[in-house]
Image (cartoon, rainbow, N blue to C red; front, side, top):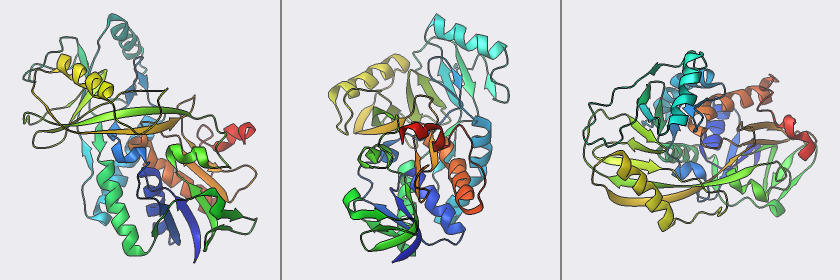
Length: 351
């Protein structure tokens, strides 16, 4: 019943932390309720260096990209599965404003180190309806987060390192020597709860904002060699005529319900992108947490160092979580410094 670490939540952040800590020889127990509330379960897992209408280069992108190219294959070997896929992305510039914004940054060198073809070639895509100019990115792809999490879950069970239960604050206590959850004791506890952080009395006052997104699972024509297509909404080719599409962005109704409006919004956008017939086979919703600076939050509570958080990845979990998990473990085990722009201490006034 004694552990080095308790980890609350087995989304992509909790999964990678558990793997890294096990690799360090640490005794870990992951507490997870079956992953029913995790945004990771329904995430597209897209990896993209340039995002948003303003075409902003993602924070620390090249560091994250270089690291994940080695890290995901490492875990694929351990878990005996494939969940990381490199695939180019074609981004359409829908409006003159978007085009001007991108070209200004492109011509001024804002995207140094990013492999960009501009204009990108679109003539090989049969049935393409979008007529705007596009640029193509090559340091892109996707992670099948659900497959990854299921593989990690199976492995954790084999290791005796998973308990399927719901973490409730009333079952938890702490003192300077140890933390206790029910009958389990540990030196430290790491919270990777996603939007369930709202129920955490130690970190709930962090200035997170919630964003609900709905995704569609589709069947359509088999097209070999397709890139990811992005024209406001994105279309991710999977395999054998399977696709994932999305995502909506909702700040008001923050729940896990799917809606007819979310479905129609994405299908209408796809109807302007490609002239293909799709069959809807699934729809899912998730809630992501992000901070106003769109950077994650990691590290120990400034007043209770045995309590640790790893959250706020937003839509960039597949990209950022591998390196951030390693940095957090290195910090906890070796005392190495966290990056100041992701350190929870930047929000100490809220805690």
